[in-house]
Image (cartoon, rainbow, N blue to C red; front, side, top):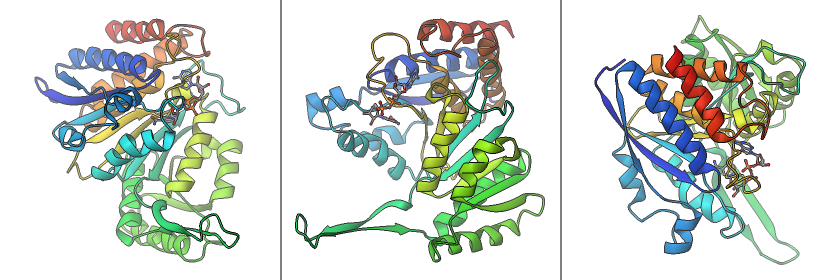
Length: 352
Ligand SMILES: NC(=O)c1ccc[n+]([C@@H]2O[C@H](COP(=O)([O-])OP(=O)(O)OC[C@H]3O[C@@H](n4cnc5c(N)ncnc54)[C@H](O)[C@@H]3O)[C@@H](O)[C@H]2O)c1
């Protein structure tokens, strides 16, 4: 806790429901900060698909430099496929931020909030998925030759570096140390005999430095089944960019859907700001109706405060979210407005 401190946060609300859920997350974060004696100063950047239509860019040329000075970034959602292709909005804003700030750990908590009915019989699980966020299958290495011809070839090469693999595994072991002490490392080393065997080798090397953490290696297919059949057996799950991408969507599904799925893109060295955002997109189908569930964004803001060293305020927000869902707020899509769910969380914060 850093009483009296003011954190300087960049807000990028984005498109569709992004501004609504960012406003909600900000109100809750500010209320928690006030209770714990610190402050948040926000600077809002209007970078979005509308901004693109006006300027021809998703963010200004010096956008990254503008963000660099902030303590953290809170993002809503980016994308409006009716006017701007997703490849443009993604590559023009989100991906450059993750890359420029070396946010190599993508963290997503998966558990059921009280009152939320997931699709599984299991009611109690608490999984922290950690996805490598900068290389692997999404490194972008490759190309197409003989385009449009019969002999056309497409090559997409996964890149795994010792530095990249080791640092994400260390991050996972560190996370397990302060949780329940178990790491599940996910590969497919029976079929992918170079990169994934390499990952398994580095897992064993890193594990040697953490004798108190129990590590088990799983193949991605077996892990997908385990997350459905026995999610309660899992603690920290660490995986490559592609495998982590898929497993975290599964994680969002078993925790009740996108309305609850929070995420952090973290630069653990703190050499640049980290970015916190709900997993969901701009939800064009419900945008403007005031019906977005703000809990995923609020949870992401709680992760931001934790990253900033404000663990008590972060825990306060999670407790308030649980109080709100216990009272039936935010647990069924469209049952209450964004504002009503936010108010329920704010009420719980002020009751504590
Ligand atoms: N990180 C991001 O900013 C991000 C992530 C995913 C998609 N997108 C973009 O968002 C746009 C729409 O994508 P999509 O429709 O495939 O995915 P989406 O996540 O926006 O919506 C999928 C479904 O989930 C519902 N939903 C999502 N969030 C919700 C919430 N908080 N409360 C209630 N319901 C919610 C939507 O109404 C929709 O039916 C696209 O442009 C896409 O590229 C952005």
